[in-house]
Image 1 (cartoon, rainbow, N blue to C red):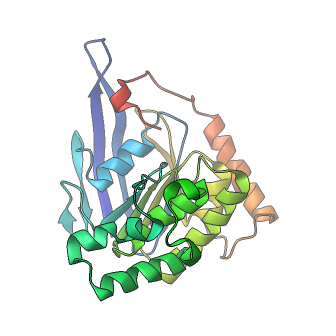
Image 2: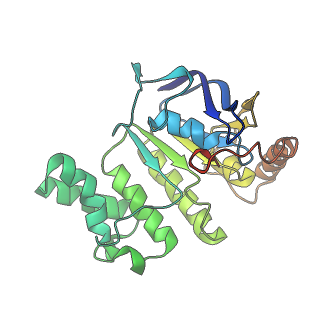
Image 3: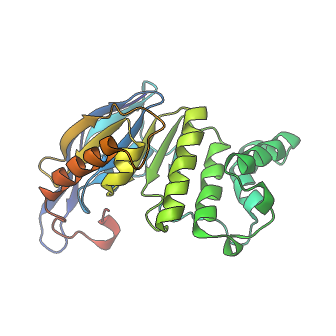
Length: 262
């Protein structure tokens, strides 16, 4: 279980000599096996919130509890998937998946077995010896996901992992992610600005907007799984979500480059 309590994050504004809130008083709980989407326009703090939960960024106020323990830094219990797969170009697909396991457990028969399981899990066993430049964008993202899954994290944190893919690849990976998650249920917090994606994936959707009201609505989704992309109910839900997004500005005052947030 992930518990976020009264999280706020303030940055110095660029050249203005003041302070700006990117995140304001966010509280929510992600239960075991729950899929939560953070949905909102660019600049509303979605990635900042994810980075605080991951331990990459410290909040200005508030705290995060994971399995009852306070989170003050990154840890292997929270696997993070970024927009960019960040694979090592000089390693094969199998070697990329093995990287974390070898660092923690050594190059053992068990490690090699786990790597094979990871490749099978994402449907890329035939590409074990391929290098990243020989793989499509969707394949590289699947390898990055497998690299995390073999470490068996207790939660998955995903920052718009499919946003750079074409529509067909994005939908295929959404389905594969749901299949993997349903076989290995852990809390998932998934950042997106796409209403259709949130409607298709989530158990709960947190609609976020610019500070001072970072969380505008929390919407529980009761649609059964598996969901049909062509169903009227899913279409209506996505339309409602787009209506909520249309009520908010698209951006806030720009921050320093290192502080920008999608």
